[in-house]
Image (cartoon, rainbow, N blue to C red; front, side, top):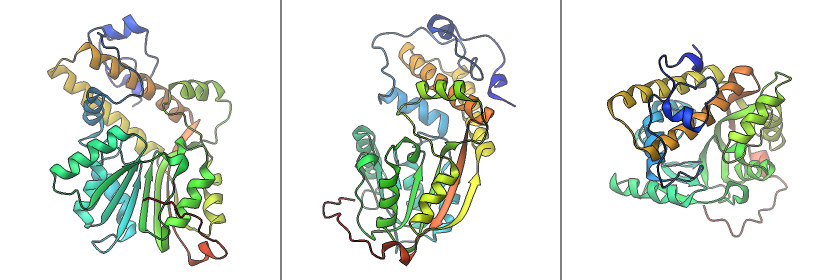
Length: 312
């Protein structure tokens, strides 16, 4: 079932006032009131947006992927209370804290938004995890990591937002101990052709802007740094199911509790973004891939660390 048929019934009143939301999520928001002052600034992080995203993807999550899903990703890392890991793109830290609870690992999370980092640290404190799940604000474009500081790195939907990917792959190489684990899940360019219009629509909708690589480019970047690639898996279909499931559950929740005009504006903005993403996924213009690779002692031969100002 595609997103076009996710919800049957009337078109959203708020949609008609603001401009029709294109397929396949055009009917996802039923009978929302018109936006009210203050108007939502797309890309900002008011508490209402956090509420919407957590309703979509689960408590502590800003992107698709349950805590069980993230834990399954990191099962390969043999994590324990004797190990440390880095979560790049940690958001509110819900998945990070779930990893700490399951494996006992010591975790550092990094996100580009200071407000999200502040809330993630507050939640760690409330849950008595402020010593084991700590979060910092940092631009991934200028990432500077502690040499040989981590037994595992997880990076979800962050790599595609980084323009200078060579630097971030260098940082992966620098920060991991020998034979340690790198896991990331992200959008990549698909193999289908003639999707310039779909990609253009997606480019306008995405925030922050994404810079897609093809899977082979990612594999080459890892091999150039002597990573051993264990998994390069197309997760597109499973990811689309996650998205559909989240929006279906949110649709049902709206039947029970009406939302304000301000929240309606946020929902419509998220809806339009996911319309563009799902259209690109369904067309094959982009895909979702999972990579799992391990570092090698060969990584650092001939490398001289110049990261005297690293922080994390």
